[in-house]
Amino acid sequence: MSENKLQNTVKRLFVGFDISASTQIKLRQIATTVTSPLLMTAQPLLSSCSQVPIENMHVTLGFLGQVNQEKTTNVYNSLQSLRGNAFSIDFGQISYWQATKILCIEGSAPPALTNLHRQIQTIAADLELYQSKYEYRPHITLARPIRTASSVTHADVEEHLSQFNQQLHPIKIEFDQLHLYESLNVGQGRPPRYQKLYTRKLGA
Image (cartoon, rainbow, N blue to C red; front, side, top):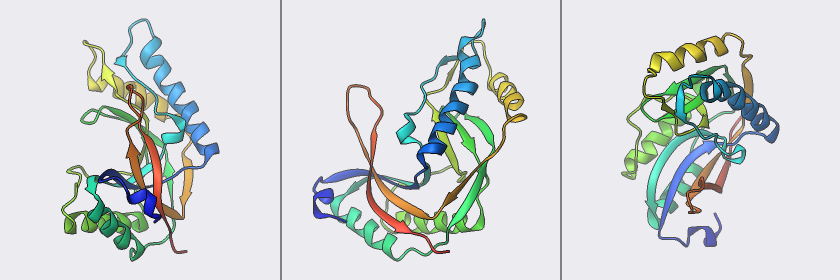
């Protein structure tokens, strides 16, 4: 990790995986296909929905929260000794997560990913950093914040998504490296920018 990337006192950090540009384009097309009828029908199901910038699409392995400089160095050192293998995921289900107000595409976690997630949670616990209270489900956020229209229920949205999912062809994505990201607030109500601080190659 270069010295200039550790200058700020506190960083908003997460560990995750990036996605190729061609796959990001496919996911943007899916996001548009899914959200358009939710927003533009005679009786819209959603009152708000903003697609995630294509360059921000990624898979989060673990969100660490606000991390000071000393602990950022500790995270970096811990990631160097992390053990894990490459893996692939078939993303084939569009879901609406009511608790976090996101629309995402999900896949099932293979053992290699579960092992990596367990190690990240251990690192977070040892350093007293943020640990999610939710069960880990690998996903790629397509849009946020998702807010339903006043008369619409979660079940109404799920019914629409179920019809779409029946025709959705899964997208297989292979992952052979993970990254430590900093989430940078660019202000003026714009989405954050994600900067890679460290990259770790995964084993075969």
